[in-house]
Image 1 (cartoon, rainbow, N blue to C red):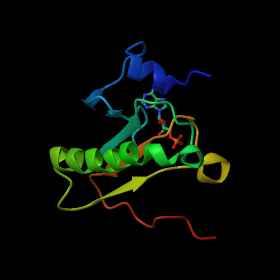
Image 2: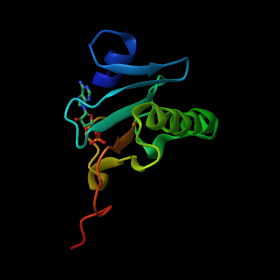
Image 3: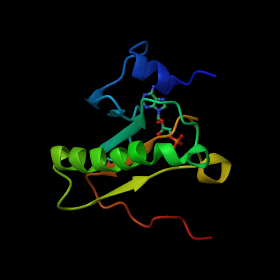
Image 4: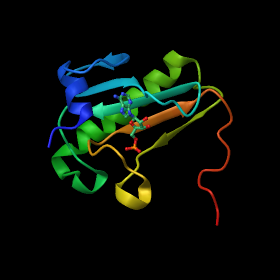
Length: 115
Ligand code: AMP
């Protein structure tokens, strides 16, 4: 099934794209949780973290490297930021195309709500 992120990567759906290369595309989240909220996605369709295969290790590493570059570009590297992969139901994943959230620009509070 084609996801909205595949359509963004293919240029069929508009998005605020901040970075693109042969391996990944990065664009601003449509519903930002903080002043900087960027999604870094592999151009290859990988549904969830559970679906990452050994041959995907380079692209997953590249996603994190691009997050670091974008944090510098956004001016949030020094103060810090959070990188999040949500996986499936308990992780709160809504779009089933692997994506790394880069979130920052303000103090983000506790990592997880404790119950
Ligand atoms: P997740 O819950 O980890 O699957 O996150 C999916 C994210 O995609 C959410 O933060 C949404 O706000 C974001 N999102 C959904 N549709 C779009 C879109 N068309 N452009 C940019 N971000 C989107």
